[in-house]
Length: 135
Image (cartoon, rainbow, N blue to C red; front, side, top):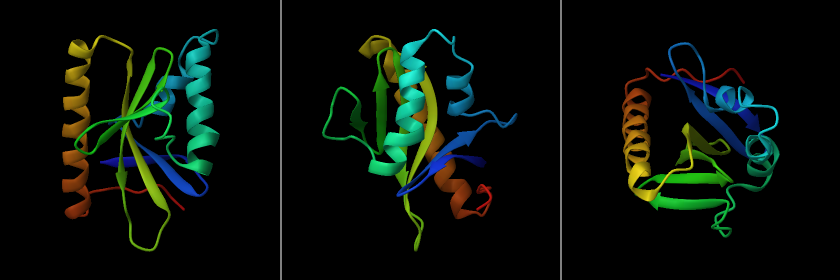
């Protein structure tokens, strides 16, 4: 499993990359240029979160989905994520994937997917199969 860095400041914001090394960030950059929600999500991930951490007090922009999974929200875009700690380093946020805004019932499989990815991440980290981005 490979991680890519979105941005590092006070917080280290990382994303899980697929086999072709695509991540949440690539999904947002591939969005239609007129998609202002994607642009706002990129700004959130590129500046707000690395500098200030997750806006957990603002439920319209970030919320806990249960268990270890959270989401960043921007008008039609959802990015699912979880916390990770690495002793002696910055606080880390690991983005799993993005999803369009859908009904609560349709969103349950996305939450299950994020949980499965987190479980794979924890196993890869424990067995030394996690590939960290270069410092």
